[in-house]
Length: 225
Image (cartoon, rainbow, N blue to C red; front, side, top):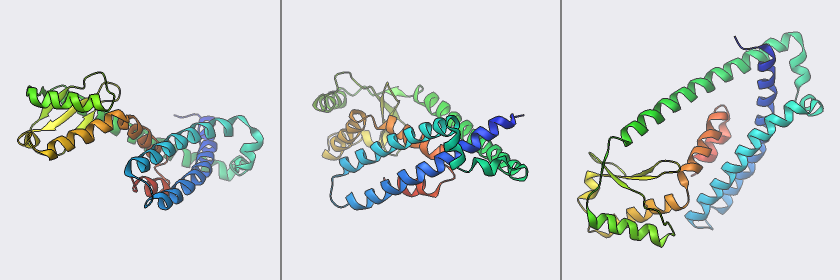
């Protein structure tokens, strides 16, 4: 059973992150509409990365501040929660939020576990021509350490797996056309993902969406990526 004071802490945090994230997301969403037709896709991607980092900081800082500063907490309607009738409602909301957040976390952890398990079962690509091309593309983007390539059965899109130690996953269907410019362009695209550490930024944006799963603006903002 969760202690009532913990639920009160969560309630104050929910009020804080709701208010602060609404401001950040509103500005970011407006900004994404403004710059959409004027900058390159790379700059738009970095714009989303920047605001994912900013939003994460706002979420963490907001929870800390609202529970440290009693005056700020009062400004965010903690007096409402102190009323006997309202206290039960706020604690119920907090308990519901924690329950859903826990279920989502368990789902994400399970998916991640099975995904990494499948990655470790894949076989490395032995084609020397593909390996040399991949090493060349990584070198052009300033990547000194080699990222291994693994083969996945069936069709589908290639992707980069891992957060700190990367792996490039390609499909059998893609490997049938290694001489084409399309194949080279696809590998170059994946190399850019590694250079920009997009998997880490993706994790950060996913964290924001999970913490703010109740907030419609977070879905609107990230749907524009």
